[in-house]
Image (cartoon, rainbow, N blue to C red; front, side, top):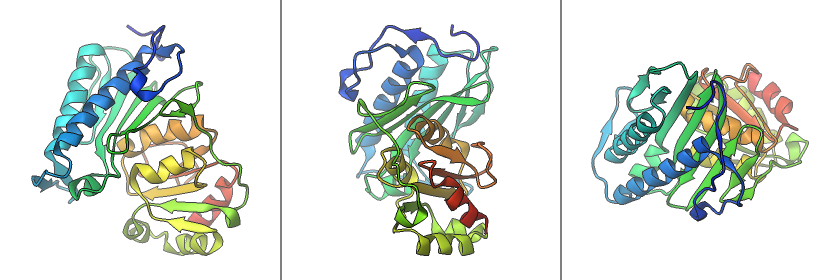
Length: 278
């Protein structure tokens, strides 16, 4: 069992399908990449042919693939790391059986609206939280065959290549990504949002994992999301930090549990945050 509060290092290499350079990775990262790839195969079995879409209590959609993917991941975690806790979108929280101080956070299909309508912008999200800190994150889109991952102190990667945020330092040169405008309006942020739209060079409402990924890769400078859950944000936090950027909620704290976030390349963060707070 891993030492409390840390991930154990193993002299293993991640499957070549992810294009990972030959170097030691933690057992937890090898596990997370493998189980996300397996979940992705399940998602693709139902993608484009799944008519069984139900509504949850909050009105959001859920498919059979969401449920099957989360069940697969949970069973794998329970078998490999039985002392760890689990927090998942579909099945809620399972308390840790031991004193590992760790919890896995699962979004089996981020972008279920897209998935249910045959739009290939969706992903399985998996993160590991240790003593309250996110130390590992994986984002896997099987439709695009793209996998992002990061581990504390080891950098951020896409399909085996190191990724970095951009060096742009002014809001006027920035591309700004955002999630649902309806949620932004409902949270009373419209005035600040409107000012950002007019101040930035380009604006795109990609939403879901993809809007975040463009910031990790240096293809956009900031991403705003509100009305979201910790499973939407956990891997995004470590990915942006390990790619050289910054994650905060709208109050400026680094919590994934307040329902909002702004990620950026770091250089423009305070500029964006100042407008959002208006």
